[in-house]
Length: 335
Ligand SMILES: [Zn+2]
Image (cartoon, rainbow, N blue to C red; front, side, top):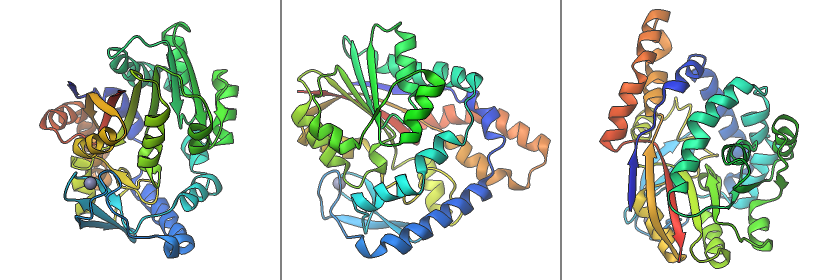
């Protein structure tokens, strides 16, 4: 199995300067309260989402949401657990996708940085595992991954993307000249032919009520030898540890109701092997250094902030090498 560790965070420093932890934190608390008012009654206790074990312990409570940690596989999951309908309602009616993508005006300079530092490295990591000519990105958001694959390979790799949000579909069409498919993720997987060399879910599984059902379906429908690629937040990471210890002032990573699960390699292995996938590669990297920055920066003057920000790449490099990165990309092959 291929293990890769670390990714430069140099390109993110400028963006992080303007992050206001308290503003983000207040927004998250308000969202969480609204969600619980509407949905608390429909939330149920569940077994581990990845390995189905009943052997779990209470792990943390964030903004009124309890998280359990599986003692078998290390998955951290919201428990009592929200159902699919309540999360769909949250993402559509509460304009999650709109807030994530559309409120940021299209900026070619930002896209160029993300193209070079996020999307192409992702593509190249996956590209080492097979001869790739077709790629479907599920839950693609604003279509930048699809755009990047097409541009980077001069159209040699035919990539397509689906997303439930009409705002994202419009954004991609207007700004990137990319035609995405608007569809519910589960409906698409259920009803469409899935003959692609690669199917990716970047930052999707953690938002779903039952990601294991999607993986099961993909296992039934994907072609033998094709690749399934997932980017997920990591359970045992420095960010998780910081969030757990300061659970009233969280602004990223462990953010209910949108992050329902945080993953371990063991949890991935357990879920994927049940549904006919073998893990071929894992790339762990993260933004834990910015988690530290958010907690330290509130009272600092401009010079101190700047000095701290300059130290972020070296700090993240050390965190990545220690194994505590907060994100991982998992590449699995269908057998
Ligand atoms: Zn488990």
